Image (cartoon, rainbow over all chains, first blue to last red; front, side, top):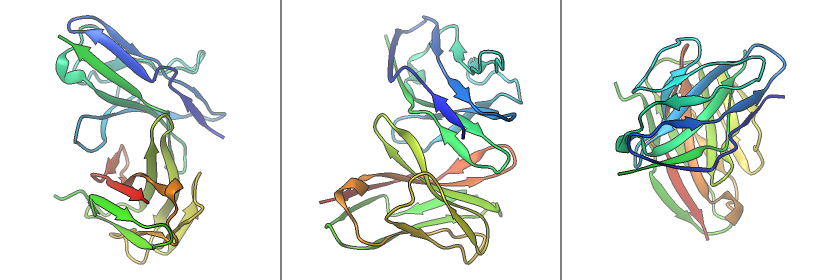
Length: 108
Length: 110
């Protein structure tokens, strides 16, 4: 069975500081990894997926199969980055398994 | 496009009452699912469907029923509400590259 672990429930950083959200997973096959974000009073939405290798809103995430990690990073945090972030893993049958989530607060 | 429409946004139930959370999508996706979101536990899969007429249990199915008579609709039924079902519920529709979520239903069972 698959499992996604986000060790940090809360993360507080100053504006302009780097931010890194940790995500580790366990799955015996080849997973597809995602980061979803939920801004205040908005619905959950896709931030990025490992296959696309994009940088979205300044965020990047690299899949490290050796360490089974998919950490989310941004070099300079902005106040609008304050949100709840979920790491998620998808298996071949389209099921998404989510981590517990990390609440990020960016202080001015 | 409306995407995923979920109703109601808020609901208060008494213990033992039943209700149905509605979910509709207009993207012609085969795969739909229901999650509950609880503090410190993330989103947990309740039930899912891979197409009309096909449903299956997720991680936390007890106390919930689903049906999928059409591609568009995937309602979630609470048979006899319990305080442990107080949560925020999300419906999702899965495309090829990402999941699209409804706005959520905040349910309180007293």
